[in-house]
Amino acid sequence: MTDTNADDDIAAEWQKNLEAEKAADDAALAKQWGGAGAKGDSPGEEDSSAQSSRVLNQEEIDSLLGFDTGGGDDSERSGIRAIVNSALVSYERLPMLEVVFDRLVRLMTTSLRNFTSDNVEVSLDNITSIRFGDYLNSIPLPAILGVFRAVEWDNYGLLTVDSSLIYSIVDVLLGGRRGTAAMRIEGRPYTTIERTLVETMIAVVLADLGTAFEPLSPVRFNFDRLETNPRFATIARPANAAILIRLRVDMEDRGGRVELLLPYATLEPVRELLLQMFMGEKFGRDSIWESHLATELWATEVDLEAVLDEKVMLLGDVMKLEIGSTVMFNSTKDSDVELRCGGVGLMTGNMGRIGNTVAIKIKDRVKKGDDE
Image 1 (cartoon, rainbow, N blue to C red):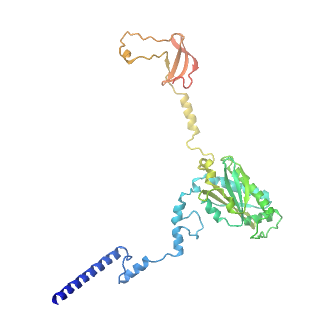
Image 2 (tube, helix red, strand yellow):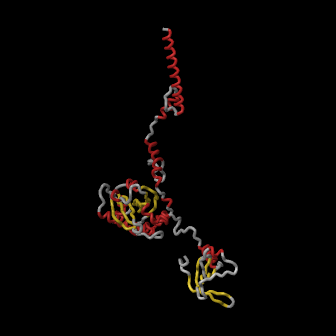
Image 3 (tube, rainbow, N blue to C red):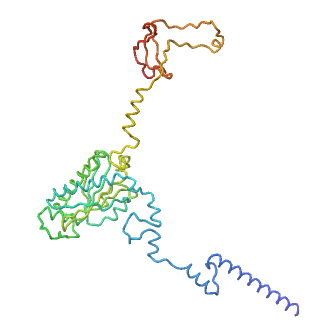
């Protein structure tokens, strides 16, 4: 009995020691991982465990993913969305675009005043980069989308007119009274008269757009078709990058928005021109220095060599030459003499004599490739 009791005491002591070691290891692991690995009895460990298991709310999830709609500015992206859209080329890398569309605003102001016989003010809201699929999903309906083709660039663009401007244009062109807002009837398709009037306005805008690009690159924007469903106005792949230009058209108390979408593939033929900082820019050109360099080049002295004849000899024969040896050439007094400068043949002529000076009368120029 005594031996059995002793064995039980030893086993109990071992069990106690093992539990103590396990508790110490768990405490060390919990301390290392901020309390996430083990739950202790102290209040600090309970707070740490609760903090590690906290669930993010919707606002924090939107901020992490970069879909925070509070700012409303497409240029300020954060989170995962900023990483996904990092491949978009910023319009700021094409400085000439601002010059072109600032010119377009001035032209449209004059053209739409003549078109509507009303006091029209056109302003440029912003220029942003966007993916084509994202833009189609963001178009507020109802709207009219005009698809146009850049003939010289062999590609397409999109012009969107929102419902506010559509009803305003119809109201103005059909004799609506000033001082009253245009009546809107939502939820119905646009009539033939409305589509025809908007199509005429789109033609005016496209003509001004071609005039705005003319100092940079002559191009004609031809109207292709009119759509009211964004799915039928697809001119590029959804993931393709594009430039979006938002224009505001105000006619006293009426007006609306016009949006121009130009895919980067459309602007690719004139991308080098759009990289300029100002119209007609040419880096590295200095007319004063070019004129001075040309003047100095004309006054430069060069050495001319008159080659009577040439002969190919073996190296052994050359090494045998001594003082008094004679080398026979095949040229005669009537043979052509070649004038060279730096080893490059320039002209040929006949050798003669003027007084005590040997002269060469130039007969012809050496054509490129003759001496090769």
